[in-house]
Length: 231
Image 1 (cartoon, one colour):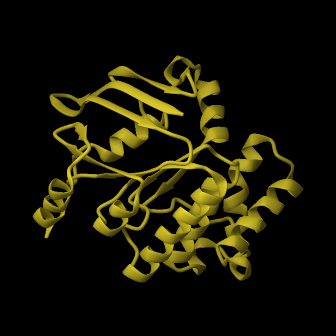
Image 2 (cartoon, one colour; image 1 turned 60 degrees about the vertical axis):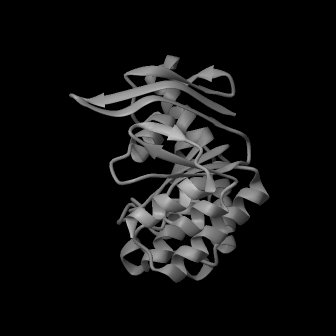
């Protein structure tokens, strides 16, 4: 579904990504681990066309995403990608349901159809009774559920998640992990998720380690050593 090859990215003299290559299959859940500053967020932003590499290519279903014009890229993101961030980035003036529906409205989906899809997702995430609440009236776990529903509303093929449980307690984190796998299995959507959680990373279909701007597929011992070094 997605193939990234030869991705390089530097900020001044700081090399963040060095010849990164990555493939993602439909419905695959990939965990991306690495120390802070290893380049995980930068890579996700580039995969999602929120940032541009200095060199390299990303093909989505055979199409070079950086050969697209700006408007075409925006539509590509809206229709095919979903995003979940550590800090949910909900719009404070809108209700939970309105936040969920925004990508569908942007895509030109009718209000009736958008709201039906949004309500279905909120119901699936046990948020029916919170649909009319604004973000300030929701807990951290509830806000992240809204963000996940928003990421799914346009039936994306790939969701990019950057530390989606980084600011949640262990109980809420576990629930979010469970929901991600359930929704992925039901919908066939692929996930690339940057995480500092050894537990979640081990649950993924494939776990990758970022070190020195490169991606490796670590052995079990190397993977365990990475998390031990963080303790």
